[in-house]
Length: 222
Ligand code: DC
Image (cartoon, rainbow, N blue to C red):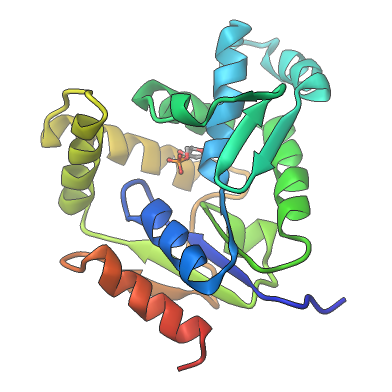
């Protein structure tokens, strides 16, 4: 069935600027912004509070039980976990790593796919993540793959963390992001990659406004 309004899929590695760009683009288009990384982070928060180790033999079974009852609601840019707004708790670097490790597991991806497809079913969304254009909405009307030079991504990441009161050098940020990108690219299920029909945008040296302007021109057909 044809959607009334399009889906804009934005994928790419850590620190490429996806979240800010997707949020701004959604605002400009009057679309809903969906941050799927935050959904994986919310699952990581819940798993951590239950002491679930993704490397343990019991992980899949315990996650299956947890996900069967966990209420994860996407309310625009806000994420509710069992009725509690956890949006402000998701920026912690350790949660990004745990989310990346949990995202290799089929049981987690299957639940996320269900929620993400429901969130975009009516179109009119800008959804960002790692597998939106390749797996979640492989029929999205617009697909972008946002990347940037690793050192610039690390510098942005370090600045972002500093703004949240977390001390981290560019070197440390670089090491952490390369490790997370490697895991996200090498996993067997829906790995991070550019969809064949996605438009690649290198945001190195570009401002957020410049990137948003490019994407928005494509979506508006200009
Ligand atoms: O976008 P982010 O850095 O907040 O995402 C955290 C992790 O979640 C990321 O390292 C891998 C996983 N993820 C995923 O596997 N698929 C997505 N669509 C989004 C995130």
